[in-house]
Length: 100
Image: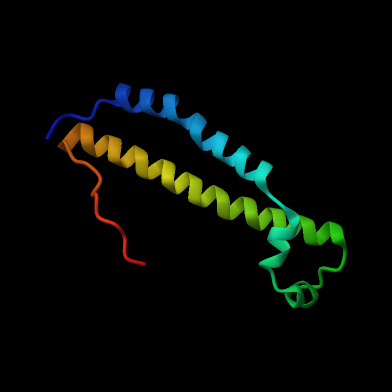
């Protein structure tokens, strides 16, 4: 096992954190109200006492952003973990496909 070099980790983060932010912005730019509304149960808003268009839009965008950020950040952290594993253990990501 090699010693973990924090300067390499810092450099990786500095070089790759922009990808996280670029994907967030791209996701927001691609957000379409009609698409998001089609995935939601309209009765849920009534049950939650969300009655105005402003409240519906805020609820939709907050949920979309939260979900999108979790996915993008998870993917980014996976890349960081693979990088560290490669540096310390000469490991790599499996080429196997997930069965879901």
